[in-house]
Length: 434
Length: 100
Image 1 (tube, one colour):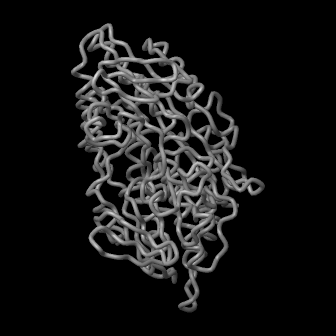
Image 2 (cartoon, rainbow over the protein chains, first blue to last red):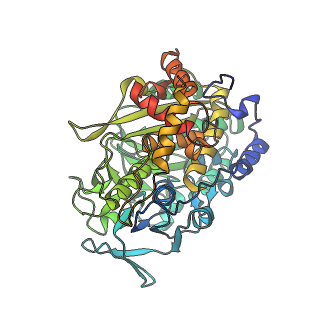
């Protein structure tokens, strides 16, 4: 008899010390945990060619699941311009020095060696919507039966922030990478009594709790290391958009100056001033997260068909574009009722993979898919909150609707949540990249 | 009646059904897409992550999820469990019971 165990009995509950050393151990554990390689079946009878553009959370996951569910008859090519994926999840912890960007890199070796995904490093210059042919900057061209695009986001920079030089002075650090490290360096260079100003764009934007989490992490670090400093949050939204309870408490704990309904209209990088609808605000460090749109490959190829021209509308039973047959758009770039975030992009990718394989087999789509969004948000260097939502397809509205009883946030921040966060992150990245 | 063995047998029978002709494709196992909602935390096919659930008996998985639906205040997994119907919980239980 197997003894009854709690579903969430975290292996790390014994307590992993999450100081800088603990984090570097966890970073290693990302690979030490060695997610099990799933065999690619040879006998499904399913045949087809799929090209995937973008190797983030959605793109990597759809490539893996097309192979482990579809088998060797499904030819999968993943086109990605970078050698590794830099995880946005956990990247706010680079800002307080508990993580490094090098600990957040995920390569494509497992997708190639375990699952037989063909990895192509390159930049897409055009998509022929009628034939689904994809052409790269190198001139190489890729044909497929079905195309999956998972490009993530792009930004609309406000006046004064259009150039690379301006963006280097006022980073967004909202695509994890060199800007994340740059923002960390700016924070450590702040004087005691300094002012850190960050801005949040109007919805929809990537990772709804992320900006509030960032404000908490930065304020928590400044409180200890640069006494007397101030964190000001300018939010284009009318109020906190996610984990209202956790962040209301967090902002009070850290003394964060939160200003809703405040939109950045321009940036003066010489005087380090933000022009807003509520007047000018100066800071030692400015962190402007600009308004989002779908990644450039979507807008440049006529696939952004929402009324605001920013996103692609899709059938959430398959993530196939409603205007471009045979082209599927998953993750942040599609317009759905679901949040734009890595965990749910992973699940959208599985719905998309299942749908493509059913279409290759002449089968009906799954009529009632679920997706789920789950994440942990650090509130201090040692405590975290969580947020979760379980979505179900609603045939009447043809949208994914969160099940009310299954959506909510943690009752309180805790060190237990912080420890669970590390396990969740390792498992999620394993399911996507290993 | 041993529910878990029954479920496992059904799922295995479906998963190993031979392709009779080149044009015949294997049907997706029942519950697979639904169960993939668990993979982000429990590893692909439930093989690890926060808690290995692959190979647990279907009756045990069913019982645990039903208990979680009642637990108050809910932890993250307790809240997730509240999003599934009884029929869906049976599908999840059968799927993971058939994994290794």
